[in-house]
Amino acid sequence: MKKILSLIMLTLVITGFSSCLKDDSIIGPDAPGAIKNVVEFQNINYISSGTSSTYPLYVESFNVAPTGSATLRVNYAGVNAAPEDIAVKVVQDPSAIEKYNTENSTHYIAMPTSLYTLTTLDLVIPKGQRTAEITINVKPDQFDFALAYALAFKIVSATNSTISSNFGTVIISLGAKNAYDGIYQYTTSANTSLQPNKNVEVELITQSSTAVGLSPGLLATYSNVVTYTVDPTTLAVTVTCPSLGVQTPQDVRSKYDPTTKTFTVFWKQGNGNRTFEETLVYKRGR
Image (cartoon, rainbow, N blue to C red; front, side, top):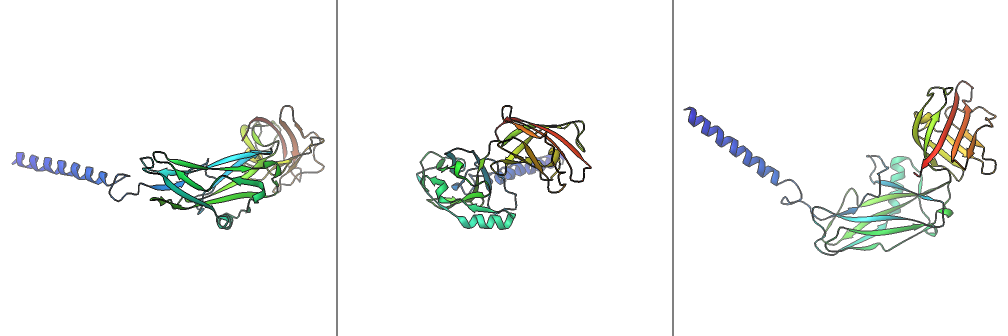
């Protein structure tokens, strides 16, 4: 009797393994009915938009110069490369920018055509390959720092392929970096309120031709917005912090040293309750 039960159990185990293997075989790109020929935009860099955004947004920043360029690639996704030449038609879609602004309370505008040129939007992914690309050539020295430029692109057709529902439309924010933009080593003095002797990497992000915003926020710790503005003639630094206010007149010791690319900043909260003494030393581009 024990032998019969053991045989039954062994049969059930083998059958179970067989079922699992069959179940596994229906998962993945080689499964019956699986979509193998998805065409989509490839990630340019990190996705800057939140997960609730209909369209992904990428940020491309350029040094202030007569020319700059970014590359947008269309990708044939899947295990195998393209089995044949795949013609892909891309169009610009300004309505996607409007929708993004509505969803994210942003204020991007479609970049004027005078500030950029594109290579062809009629692409071909060659047989045996995976990508085709669009080059966006821009004129950063003509950007208006007060405006947030963006371009939106949409795949409208791809021969014998399915267009991705998530990455069939993308938005690219295109901005210029001023002379102070970059990644800095940020330190505070022992006299600094709340975060004395802080020592971390931070970003200074272009806000205008002479101003940069501290990221992440006040004392590289809090979300309070802090902006440093450099007088290009005197190199004096003026601080703004709308949530705390800044005591005036501001400390005349606050300076920017263009030789060492260093900010030395002294300021107090508007009511004088808190003291901030900060040093930011440039490390590399952002």
